[in-house]
Length: 334
Image 1 (cartoon, rainbow, N blue to C red):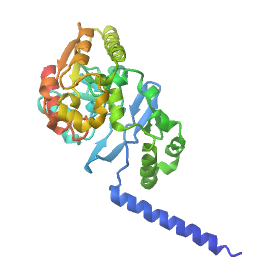
Image 2: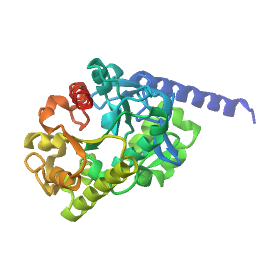
Image 3: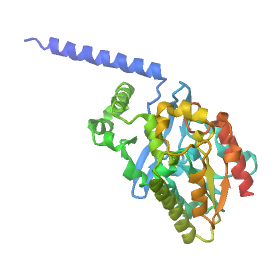
């Protein structure tokens, strides 16, 4: 049998795959479906220094990030205020020039933004411990995100999620065949990556239910109060280890607290699972404030009262919201 037949079939297959890959790159602008710069270290979840990505937003827009030392989007300036938190402090979905730390610098107060998506408060404090020797901050701000920090308080990030090939996967995906794909060189194919992400979403929880699972307003009272105690314990323990470092806890509201209309648009029929009305019941924040009687608190509820401060269809701060955050942190650091 001639060898030309199999060789031609192989060449044709490679050509078709190359054309499909090229089409995927053209349609997506070469942007990956998710951030793939995560790292699982002995100290916890981190981002990889030197990683540069342009990512797509659900509305079709895009944004670019460039990670510096320690996986930060800001220089590790010494002896200035350090701000730790999750994707809000990271500036998810916002371009470099609109990040809150840029606004703070323009107000005359340089700061270090140490945010990592998916971190809870205890994770963020662990990151602060790692940065203290090099950065030697003049003070520390710890941001509590009302959107999901109560849910994240149930376990460290690397117990809730897994890092595979730089991708951050939920446990059900990490335990599936998808884990093998994301650990392989094939993950660099945009065509296959988008297909894998779409495949994984078939069995993933409804995003609205996932939001509810992390929201204190949807938690049973006992679970919510347990998370509140966990957040407070982590903050008190850090403050006790570093009594010389001024510490301020920042209350960052969830977009669900804006109005009942926002809840309807974000949760739809899933709002029936709410235990409390977030637009009118501040009980989770009141409980946390009561648990932190000896710590300084910067409450931003009155500063972010409008939907324009949040991204559309997302709980993350918009560029306008980031500007407010930067100005308020700068004012508190004076």
